[in-house]
Length: 211
Image 1 (cartoon, rainbow, N blue to C red):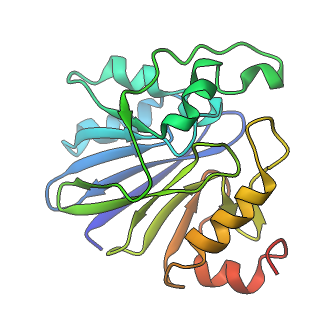
Image 2: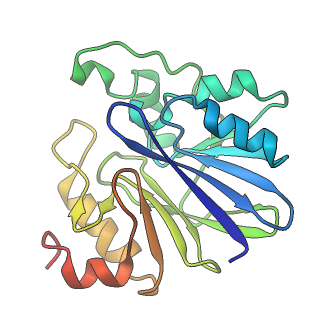
């Protein structure tokens, strides 16, 4: 692989926050920073990584709670990318009020992601797949060359994301999985927002919600 993927399980809901590193250039992306983590910051410093971006699969509070913390610790500005359809969710505290507390996420990201968009991290190319269902602006980040897809709360190992929230749609969720995820090669590894990683082939065959 030309990328290294470091997984950190953070926060009270045990979110997977991913630090993805292009091995040749040492450029890094932080995907769904749940909370600020000194361990992540120490790894960036120790390996002399250049944090180029933070990538948000969707704007629920447990996937964006660490953005401000990392921005305050990193010397240079770090762009934050998110689909604009989740902007309102971000500004409303990431759904925190539904769980009985207040959360202020700060200014919404100005790097707007769109379906089919491509960007590079060093020499690694990422594709943005708009995969609504869990939220309106949910996206998946695909590195096809390395067979890696960061799929947030769309699909999990033998499970699927919630679709009973105000910002959710069950029809969109199933459509996104069938049309965007299950159209990928079966050896693509899925890195979800919670729980263990899986693969497209494994979920096609054994996910009880999708048979």
